[in-house]
Amino acid sequence: MSPAAATTPSRHLGPLVALVVCSLVIADRIAVGLGLGPATGTLCLATLGSLVIATQLGWRQALLGAAGLTLLVIPAVLSQGNAVALTGLMAGTALAMGFTARWQLQPTYWLMVVSLCVLISNPSNSVALRGSDLPRLLMGLALCCGLSIAAQATLLAADGGSRPGELTVHHSWRRCLAYGLLLTSTTVVTTLLALGDHWHMRGLWLMVTPFLVLRPFVRDAWKVALHRSLGTLAGVLLVMALAGVLPQALPLQVPAVLLATLTVLIVSRRGHPALMLMALTATIVLFDSSRANLLNIADERVQATALGIAISLAVMALAHPIEQRLARRRREPPPNAPAGRGGRPGSR
Image (cartoon, rainbow, N blue to C red; front, top):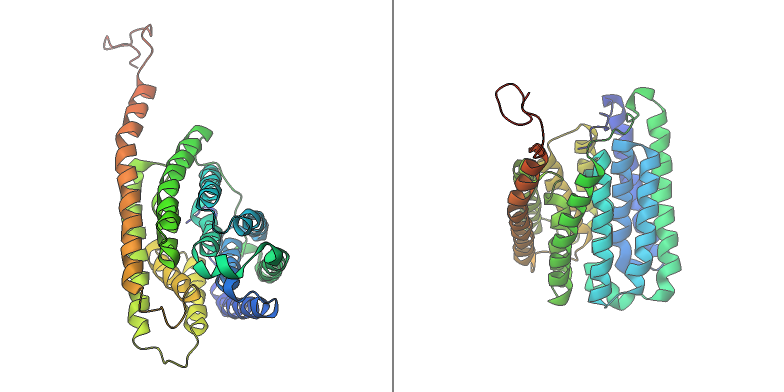
């Protein structure tokens, strides 16, 4: 969680719950009204991402994230069915995400990446969404994100103490570039697997996992990666459990909205990242599924998630000795450095 995040006061939790529920219901209705049924999951998850970013970082950062997603959607729709072009798009997105680590924003902005991955990986979109649908999709994104951000800004303005603090620099540009390249290389592998081998809806979890697991410093990432991996797997398993008890007549949007609300509440109270990821993962699965495939491919979702985690951890394991070697090289004194007390070159 970003250090700039602020804890939402308890008295605002009720209005926040109402805001999340209303925003997601409105997003669903906007998708139906614009004839964008296949993109309902993308619009709802973009709305959820806007709400989470606004809660953590303020409405300006949420607006920036929504604008970035809108720009990325244009080539994503125009490149439907072209695995190479979509892989290039995801690689560029991963590199850009690497630079957001300078201000430790990547744990928040990746929520917008999830919306992009849903749009790319869902096979129904490649059939139902065409270039002629792009203006309506952009309009839907603008309406969904804009309305939710405006409402959240109004709620945050009600109490000056709830405003997020100023952004601070956490990593050098060199570190951000290294992280971006690490994330990009992993994303290329997982995206090619997801699209080239036709994983379809299951491929979403291959594509998203690197953004969940990888961190700017590999040596500090193992514990975080473990928590995030367990949270992601727990979310998929939670959906498998819910699939057996949910009434057949109940639309999946109902539990999805409830879990999305729980996600925002956990974020607003700065809860454990693994718990937040469990709720968020279950939300994504429900928004990206139909009743017919909810349980049928649940085990395949677990396999895709586990494979994505394994690839990310393998890349981290390869990068760790390189990071250590570079760190030692930066600490070594130059050959002609004067000897300090103790007779060693450069000692102090």
